[in-house]
Length: 394
Ligand code: FAD
Image (cartoon, rainbow, N blue to C red):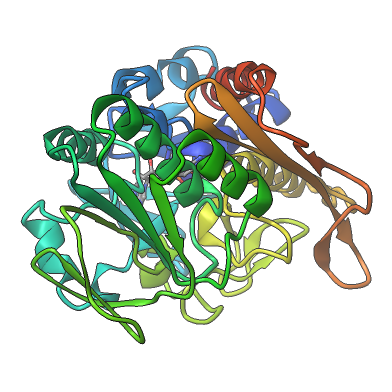
């Protein structure tokens, strides 16, 4: 009987891992991918839906490529439990599947209950996050469309680490781009729990003030501690009322990882052996993507999740073939951010495994940062998206 790898989550990490286990094993290892959504929907580029420059459907890719080109069994379901001792996963609709190796790439859970009032406001559809691309992205766009000229949109950012460090800063630029065209008396206020913009700070601030003068107000060191109606309450500062609230709470590893007892780092993130991405809490369970405790300098990004997936897939195929893992894996990252629908900035880095410290370190002199926002990088950003979707799902 062939060895079997089960992958939970068909996002940036999971889809890539499923495909690369098949490729690296010459299709000899059986792969089952379990994902509740009909198709993959990309968070990268989803802030352009809020701007009005793109449709949500343009962010979707079908799982048919994985089924047809790579012989992966894609099961549309949600994994409700993992039994690390029996090496089985239980499906929400019933039944269970046995694995030799399990890959979890469940992304993040948004901890709504850490902000009093947020769970209720979210359930009523009043205060959205849209931090997982999908119907909520469209619903937030509708709230922005319904905002009268002169209205206020407020976005709140939790303390790092959270999914996509530059994402909130890109979002306020693109919402301002929409306001500038459609309702120029409106305002964007960004409340950041961090002391300053955590990624590409100088480039974002320059773009905000030059492209959208007077439209975006940045208020650092503002930690949200409650929501009442349309009012934000802060730990230190005065309350603030806005027409559209977009509150991003603290995050942790996707629920299935927490429930399985794998979130052993600050009770939020999954500790892994960086050589193989095997959980430090359970044998034969490899965890990748946003759910893990990252080494310094590694952001929670789709590009990183794709890179983790390849290292994990290679380690799994090696082990199932009786070989040792690659002793010196490398990870890469590029994050493009739109500051207008046709203007982009980027940051890039390379991370190498350092045996003596058993962790990844940023390679000195690798990567870089845009010197200025520009239109050519907008083309590169779209090319990046097309290529990574093809790499993960094609
Ligand atoms: P995901 O891609 O979220 O995949 C998780 C999958 O697991 C989901 O499909 C979910 O349905 C499934 N799942 C969860 N639990 C279960 C379960 N129990 N059973 C079965 N399936 C389950 N990154 C970049 O690199 N570049 C960018 O430009 C960029 N822009 C972004 C902009 C925004 C607005 C946001 C929110 C994020 C952005 N990111 C970007 C970050 C990127 O989206 C994430 O880092 C990436 O999605 C992480 O991949 P993942 O596999 O860990 O999680």
